[in-house]
Image 1 (cartoon, rainbow, N blue to C red):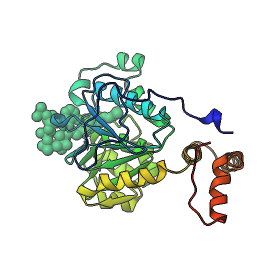
Image 2: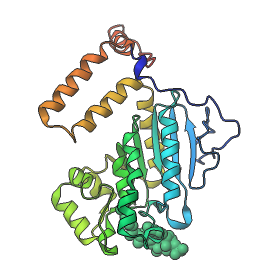
Image 3: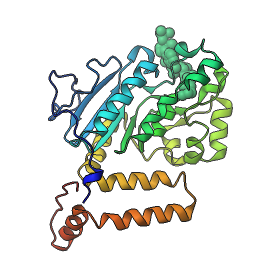
Image 4: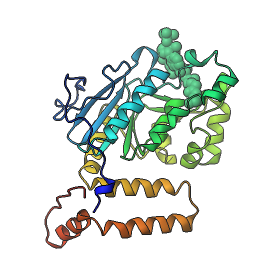
Length: 294
Ligand SMILES: CCC/C=C/C(=O)SCCNC(=O)CCNC(=O)[C@H](O)C(C)(C)COP(=O)([O-])OP(=O)([O-])OC[C@H]1O[C@@H](n2cnc3c(N)ncnc32)[C@H](O)[C@@H]1OP(=O)([O-])[O-]
């Protein structure tokens, strides 16, 4: 019944291994090649039904240059289209999730080219990914780095993580959600303080207390914890998981009654799925459900 919701199959397997094993994890069991034959700024691997994308531009603290974002969009799209993947984790290094948009790359740009080319417009593609994305943040998440984390669905932070919007100190303003998503996450006063001063940052603990981050872990554990949660999600019914993501995201766009109606209709529609019958049937029969994503 959910056939129409199924994601098209991506290539079944990699011709050449393009993934690099992340040190903390066992080798990928079902490594998936991204569409791009060469990744300059990212590492990717899979662990069961979880895709792990590591921002990897260490010399620039993972500053988000155009090439990095083009690669990120492509690999996320590939994982979103891969039926063997149920959720995605994005992480950076211990020192930096990302220290912002690449200042050196953009410093000489002009207004007209920004406007005509919709400079950084492609950053929002991440918000179109249907599968849940968890950001596992260590170190700096500044400017566009904080905005990238906020475009993910869940943020886990290492205890030394720092969130900030320093753009004003560069003579510009946040351009990918820092004045919008941040307000919804931490409230007006904190968002104003961060964006207006550019120097008031949130520690991981403050970010958790404010609601920007859902959990804080010791730095070396945050990625493992993100993968554990991603794995739990990935092993639920993928179409139903997507409905939850869709419904929660609609709460940012819709008035309450419209959002509640949207939610109710999606709830009704789950009863057309085998996974709802399996989930509720398994509960009644006191066994674990075996979801088949249809
Ligand atoms: C989406 C639209 C709106 C978004 C706008 C933004 O995000 S605006 C941005 C908002 N973000 C900011 O304003 C934060 C800018 N960054 C900083 O303030 C500091 O790097 C730090 C405090 C994060 C770390 O200080 P630290 O002393 O520990 O380290 P370090 O400083 O020595 O850096 C190591 C190397 O990384 C380089 N690099 C770092 N960030 C960027 C970048 N964004 N760009 C380019 N390069 C960057 C840095 O130049 C250096 O390279 P070099 O010179 O050796 O070739």
